[in-house]
Length: 321
Image 1 (cartoon, rainbow, N blue to C red):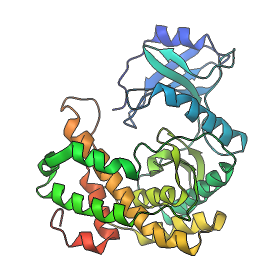
Image 2: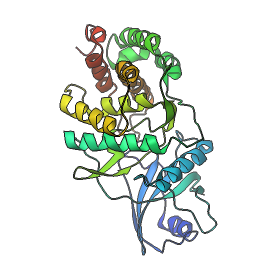
Image 3: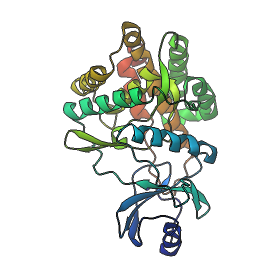
Image 4: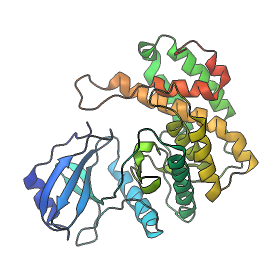
């Protein structure tokens, strides 16, 4: 469950008086997601999403995220910008947390994407990248390649509590991938960096919304594509690879934003890097989330298995055979 901060009807009703959105009719917590507290809010005028930003989203980063969403929305991209209050302010405080009232987008996230849905997601990502070509603000990728080793060391030998041998095997993969990593000659821009299927809203095969930009940062454009590939092309456990979905997502992207030969040659390294990044972040959460926490821990081995599909050298390692 992703409601960490409880909001009362009285507090929310008072909060809404700052906006021209009508009066509160109903609201309920949204279970999806793990980063922030989210509520679906219905007023006499419309529906909205209320987001309270928890510890993983720094308050100082919120102006960047809001500017990013405003920029994309102004260019016709299907994103949910924050609703300004009567003074034009977008970022507020509610129940001791930074908070925003956000535009509601129709659609559902898919659990088992089809090739047609993956193609549409690839097209949406490419159009988003083009729309960001003139977006000037930048933000460091705090989960990027330079941060994997420190996170690995913070997890330490406790990684072997997840599965015996994971510390040594993941360390080998980390060394190999970081040594192969090169940004030379590759485009950088602001990227989503977390475009999983649950962050894309769809009606049938049509993308109606791209949401949850709270890992957005400045990094390699093909790394963003690689993250999406590793997220969309496998089942939830990481055991089953769907080549048709992978090919469709790449084809959809290239139909809007073709890759050159150098980018294609680096895409595999970026895909392995994406798997390492999510193995590490999920491992950290797995090891440090209290058993009674109101959030479902995500299996770090699901991305370790993906890494072994992309890199034959890792497939020979013993963990998760």
